[in-house]
Every structure is written in structure tokens, then in C-alpha cells.
Amino acid sequence: MTDRDEEPTRRSTDAPGARELDVPAPDAEAPDAEEPDAPEPDAEAPDTEAEAAGHDETSTPADDLHPVQREARARRLGRRVPLVAGIVGVVLAALLGLVIMARFDGLPFEFDEEWAEELFEARGPVGDIFAFFMNDLGGGVFGVFVVPILTAVVLLLCRRPWGALYFIVASIVSAGAVQLLKNLFGRARPEDILVHSDFGSFPSGHVANAATIAVAIGVIVPIVWVWIAGAAYTLLMAVSRTYLGAHWLSDTMGGLLVGAGAALVLWAVFATQLERERLAWIARVSKRNAARAQAHVTPPARPRDTVA
Image 1 (cartoon, rainbow, N blue to C red):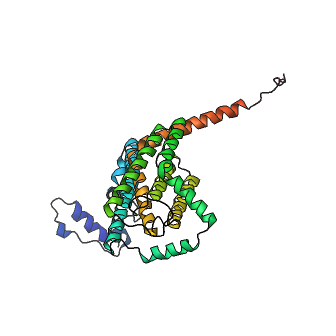
Image 2 (cartoon, rainbow, N blue to C red; image 1 turned 135 degrees about the vertical axis):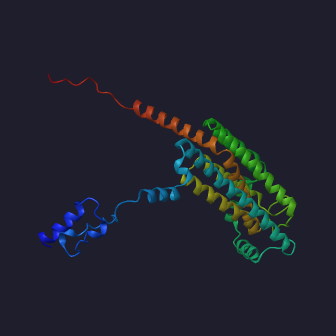
Image 3 (tube, rainbow, N blue to C red; image 1 turned 45 degrees about the horizontal axis):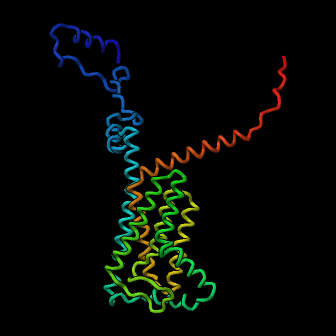
């Protein structure tokens, strides 16, 4: 575009009262008359509103809680898990008893008979000694009264009163649930029995007692080898009861569910007190160990000469 072409345009624009139609349109092809392109939105620029909305959608109410409130909620959830698991265990035991009694009035399952035949064929002097020892350990006066009382005394000596109370209550509740289910279902015991037992085969009281002890001690002393030892003790008790012909295998399953379920439910009840007591016990042990270690530190015979 030349200077001659630009002159009329300037006059028509500057003239007073000039109309907009008198001004010629700028040449689109002229580089000096091109309108600047509108700035494109930056694709990488964050959208504040979108981010805020996305944050609101993905954030959970727990994220906005105070740390103390968050810890309280975690404790409630921690108690809810054993509570639900314990209730489920007891309910499953009751359902198993109903299935057993609805099936030909308590007759054993096929796996009950096969398991019993295998163990009866394996009977011998060594097996008898083991089974009778487990029978006395897990039942009778010793298993029902002596073991819980001795365990509670040891816990009291270790300054674990809440642990002692939890163990005693769990043992009582487990034994009561077993007797309730025994009288409710009244399942007959196997005929080839080697020991004298009370009424009712389902569930096994010895196995329930063993499971309660295993879970309760594992809760009070939460160490892996304690849980492993408790599981092994419960399993050996179940084997010994079926070896003696005192129970069917399904009876021991019911006893496991009842005993563990009772201990889990009461764990949820005593969870806060047990955790505080455990942390205090750990603090005392750590302090005592530190004091013993400090007492064995031998100071030097004389201070070293300092270099002037």
C-alpha cells in the first residue's frame, strides 16, 4: 500500500462528522494492516477452578480433619475390624451347627468319618500320651480354671491389669458360648471315644478354649512368634480331640470359630485400654533396659590429660 492510498484514509478518519462507511477497509493482505491474532490459551496453564473442583471431588472428609480427630477415627476403624470379624466367626459357628443338625439329625459328614478313620488307625502309645496330655491341659479343672488364673496372675505381675481382665473375660465368654451351643444342638459324640466327656459334641470346648487363649495372648503380646505358637497350639488341640474320638472334625471347626470370635469381639471392647497399657509397658521396659546398659558402662580410671 502506498502513501497516496493512506492519505484519504487519514483525512476521512480525522474529519469531524465523518461516517464509518467512508473509511475504506484495510487491506487484509498488507502486513502492516494485519490485526494481531488473539492469544491462544496456554494448554499447559493450570485451570484454577478445575483444579479446585477436582480437589473437592477427590478429597475425602478425613483429609480435612484435625490430626487428633483423624487418630480417633483410625482407632474406631481399628476396633471395628476385630468386632466384625468376631461376630462373623460366632455366626458362622452357629450356622455350621444348624447345618449339622439339619443334616440327618447331626450325623457326621463324609470328611468327618474319613478323618476319624485315619486317626484311629494311627493310634499308638506315643499318640496316646500326647492326646491325653492335651486333654488335661485344655479341659477339666486345670484348663478351665488353673490356666486362666495363672495367666492373669502373670499379667498382673507384669503390670498389665487390663490384659489380665481381658483374658479372664474372654475365657468366661468363650466357655459360656460353647455350653450354650452344646445344649442348643446336642450333637452326639463319636462312639469310639477314649475319654469321659460332657454332653454335646458341637462345638469342641477344648479347641474353643485353645483358640481364645491364642488370640488373647496374641493381642496382649503382639509378636509374630506368639501368634504362630498360638495357632500351632490350637491346631494340635484339634488333632488331639479327634484322635481321642471326643469330637468330629467339624466340631473342632466350630470350636475354633467360637473361641477366636469371642476373643476378637472382646478385643474391640478393650482395644483402647490394652493399647495404652502396652505402650506404657514398652516405655517401662525400654527405660529399664537403658538403665541397665548405663550401669554396665565402666568409666575411665582417670580423666585423660588435656593438651594445653
